[in-house]
Length: 90
Image: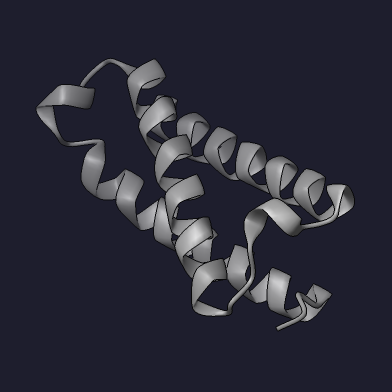
């Protein structure tokens, strides 16, 4: 399957919601209390794992994506995690 802009946006929107929900559940976990660096690392890892799983379901190999698409994914991931961390801090 070819990764179109529409499919990529659907995947990234789903990931944003998924990671936001995970953060809400995780922020109350004792292991992440007052340790935003660990939470940031955890959410980043989960984003990557979930992204790869979603791409695999569509028979798309993350390693064969164009660099522009990879950059878009990286920027979106960073933005989403920053938003989550900022919400938690406030």
